[in-house]
Image 1 (cartoon, helix red, strand yellow):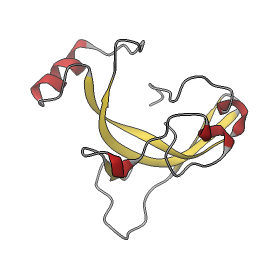
Image 2 (tube, helix red, strand yellow):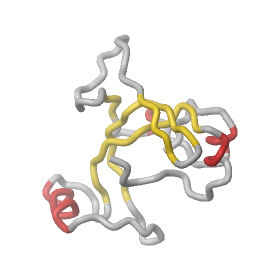
Image 3 (spheres, rainbow, N blue to C red):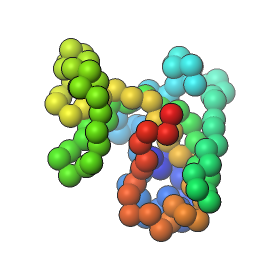
Amino acid sequence: LPSAYCKNKGCKKHVRYKSSASHSGRDIQFNGTTVKKGSSRDSISVEFGTGTATGVVIEDVICFGTETNASLADHVWEDSRKNGLEPGCVRMHFLAATHLSDDPFATFEFDGIMGLS
């Protein structure tokens, strides 16, 4: 998912994640620990087809509406209910991209990709 800090063409046409607008998000390291204020944080680059996504890891609640084609195992939805989340919502880790290569991301109609773990 593109981050609000991503300013190149590969990001600009997409909805971008802004961590300061989230009440449930937190900056994390790869191991899931919270990033301490003022400390360095892990970053990653992932190749996707002919392009590259570079960014940082975030944990937040992601909600899927009826217009998405997201498919998750039943136990994931049950865990969400047990944790007090709204139906269709899950807590997950994701890459908040600070750079997406223009090729191919500027041509994509979708804002993010799920399931590349």
